[in-house]
Image (cartoon, rainbow, N blue to C red; front, side, top):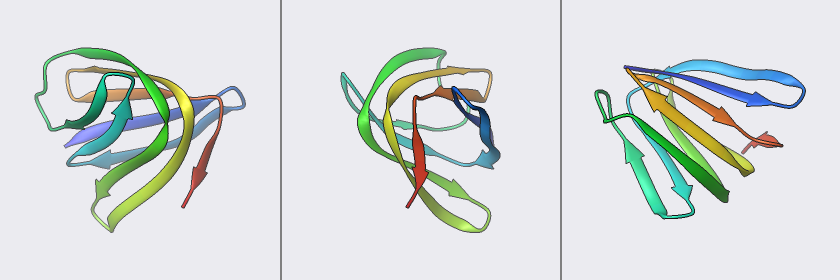
Length: 83
């Protein structure tokens, strides 16, 4: 599992566990599975999909950054909205 933290300028929005992260970077669509190589990428304004225990959750991101290392992902975004 991957620990995901979504952080906005107002602080921590959500911390959860997921089996896959689907997000759009400036370089294209990205799917991150556990044990993925370390990564830092800029995000486009797009949807973020997280496959959690309860099911698939989707969020609208206003761009930002994603950092991934050792099964921990931090998403820094100016704004996030649960869809």
